[in-house]
Image (cartoon, rainbow, N blue to C red):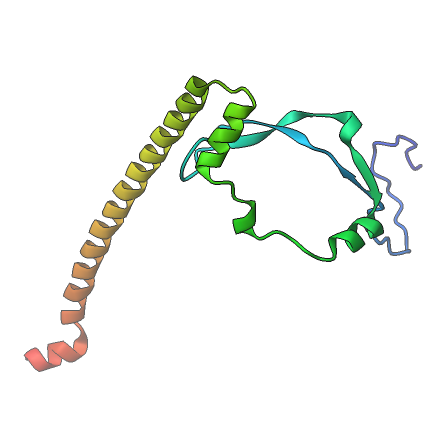
Length: 153
């Protein structure tokens, strides 16, 4: 007997092919707050992140087709989305983030970057040493090939 439990797997199989698809009908645009972040990947300046809060009264809703028509296929490039470090610092200050908090996070990020750099360079040096040893071994093996043995005799 088939189980009527909605969480159990059915032993019956359907002959009809089920086609899975996803469809979008509406676009909802929200403006989230920008906060002092913690991502150490910034090359200069303090990192910023999106916070959880947004103003529900400022939400905009559009049918997907209307949004796509308005956007006209235009997308920003990666370079256009980058915010220079001095601008991130200035934005955070304008939004009331204390300078000491900005500097603290920036120093933490720089410390993590230095640690990553040391780890990367130490691995790179070990790899170089290993490659050097491998090269020597290959050279030693190359000298003992059968063709070279014939020449030595």
